[in-house]
Image 1 (tube, rainbow, N blue to C red):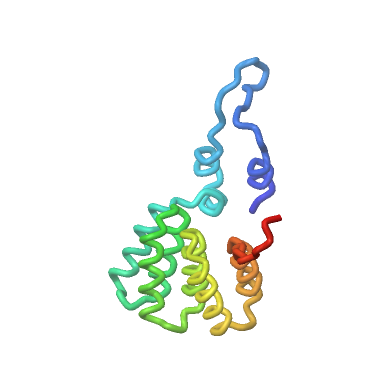
Image 2 (image 1 turned 90 degrees about the horizontal axis):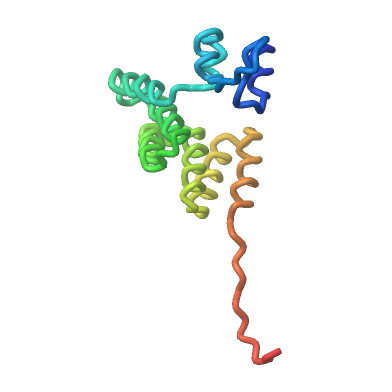
Length: 160
């Protein structure tokens, strides 16, 4: 990322003033970046609908492309469309049961849906397929931290 893009990204201001005046107007950083820094804008503000369309085109060209389903699932995940993301990750795994990244991605969909047992199981599978991937180890810990602790009821006869 170029320095100016980083600077603007770190700014917390939603408004800018016109130089030499007291006029203040909303600043649309996405529009500004897309116009002046298109390469940085694609990185900072991805157009997920366009990505989904592009990956769908890839799938139509090669319906057995496991990674195209996984990539489209990632774009759907970013849009918080958990069901479509899950369907694409399932298809990616069906096409290539050794697609460790698809298990990793699907684990996060399960976590978003609070299906923690399934999330842990998928993360374990990703680790089994790619044991040296440090991100999977870290994310296993993150997912386990999301699991609510359960309190077991005791059959104590002590009323106090």
